[in-house]
Length: 165
Image (cartoon, rainbow, N blue to C red; front, side):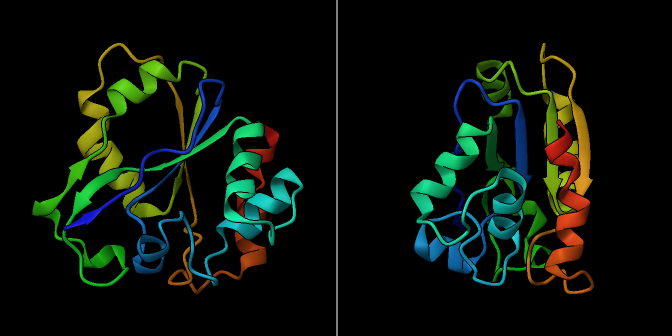
């Protein structure tokens, strides 16, 4: 079983970016989006104007300073390798979004980093949320290197919508 990470957030977050489950390199390094070819930190550094080469703690602080939280839909799953397509659907346990969203009342926009995150959230999380203010949900292309049909510059162009919020 793979185990995800706690969220990176604070109470003032207005934006939540959701992935599915950290890949193997991220799990080994205990850092979100640790694969060097993942475009996530390239995109965030461009959107929020920080140096993508700063250390991980500084990167996560830059997100917090920009009222942006990151987390994954899945808390646990069985998966060989890093691909979302390798996740065993019967093994999925999702994170506690009920508590998270009640504790983060300012979140108005939830962005999905790829299709799997959106599918699992809408299937396993959204139907079970109680008394949580309505949110805007937007699917963005995965920042993963497995999403090879788009360059990191193409991905950045699609992710620019976050900077508008």
